[in-house]
Amino acid sequence: MRFLADESCDFAVVRALREAGHDVAAIVEINPGIDDEVVIALAHAESRVLLTEDKDFGQLAYSGEQRTVGIVLIRFPSASRSLLGQTVVGIVGEIGDRLVGAFAVVEPGRTRLSRPFPGHR
Image (cartoon, rainbow, N blue to C red):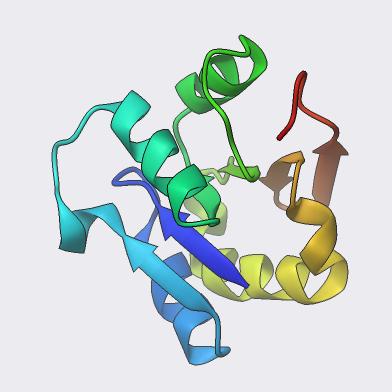
């Protein structure tokens, strides 16, 4: 799968997904500091599911003002961070294509999948 990791996304996720063979672009490597609206537009333009720990992206997508391929919101407390990379890789392996058009919230021990976005395109 193709992903775009927002600056808020723990780089352990980027490394783990790349090691698992996924195409992952990272804002921190491409253009650090760009606005959220530009990040979500870039993800859409490049057909990438957005990886983030920033809840603001859900608002942008659900308001209908921003097109999106899909968003994975990662909500991991500091006590569980050591499992973060392998957890996300496991979820992608498990539900993969269902992330397209969806808003997924990944937490230790569970993943919630909401779809579709209003006006998903």
